[in-house]
Length: 553
Image 1 (spheres, rainbow, N blue to C red):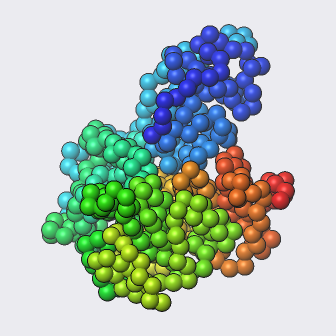
Image 2 (tube, one colour):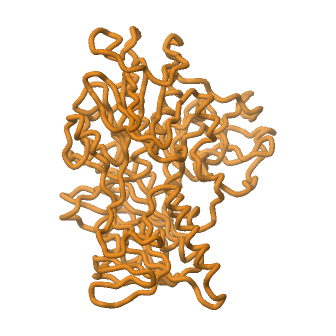
Image 3 (tube, helix red, strand yellow):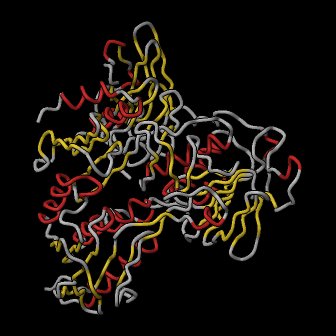
């Protein structure tokens, strides 16, 4: 998803001295491609210089041990194998052979992709996509093979968490059947993009799938799309589909995500009223824009009203402005995004949108929608040929509740993301986990968190006992400005300090509570965001205090 990569720095195929490799690595090129050369102790590694997620420059990232983190969206790669260790990158970066003679280092040919880290018993391999239903009793009934690994894995949900889990299962060498069941008709796709560049018309269709469809066939991951699971039986270890079919499982991952909150308004079901959660939703909005543009006089811009100053609502507003619609955002609060990111950032985002021609009606709400306008509670009519509603989402907990799993504002999981039922895990928007950094149970609706939880759940399905300890991270894009946010600040009792200038688009916003730094948001300070993430993960408040104290005002 990046443009043409320019070559810079030395030709590493001609060799450089060890003294020329700085602590942050050396950006150069070999074989006509950008390459990052990194020295870790007595070892030297060479990898492709751009992240496989959106093409972020790894030379501007953060080196942590024998890994590198991308500055744009915090993906993490192994310098040894190129493997993507942490989302949002799901594909490896290329590695190159490094030759050393004395103190001179030369980058040679590109190496073949790394094989699965830990090959698991081939006996688990099966052409069957899932274990058939069977009566309880005995080892086989428990869904566990003699190796101690699950006979099969069923993933309910084909979004961020489900896809990341399936990919890690294969990357870690699991050879048993994997079945992903998703209500969406589309294979796993880049959901953040459907409200950003794709909706704006800047990202082509081929950018949207997370993987080519054939990759799932190659990795023997069965996709059952456009299907719904209607029931889970933790005792028999089965799931029942809407058509009545029943599948058995050795391990089950619930990754059912969330659904948009739907407003009960007169006219809320009119055909020009849309919600945005799926790729099909984004396509429907684009189609409506095309209809309006075809019908409108050349001198008149089509008009749209966005109900809700949420992340989705404001990203939709920016995308519709990119398509040259007149856009008005209606929100009940006095400052958009204030609950999620504070008044300072909320006010900055509002001003940013106003610079691009978006109008706001704040402290107001819609009373009714008709084919030509949205009527506000105060009586004002806003002409609109398109209405998009983005007032939040609710986690899809129905399956978990009906199955008797422990639920409290989310599916309760332990540090390994296992639910109250053995063999059943939960990840993504529905999971409420014990956060080691705050001592609280958290449930967040961030894409990167969902993917990382899917990866951790997969590791624990294989018995690796990995705690989920990542600091929550998300980004929000508004025109050419990205806001990165790492950590989690409580809803109340937070002190907010702005360092730098939000108006100048060069700032860090520090959120503190109880004398501790809880979260850091940045605008064009990518390195700081990475350093804050690392300190939060390590629980290193001294490093966080020093990092943020050095920012000044």
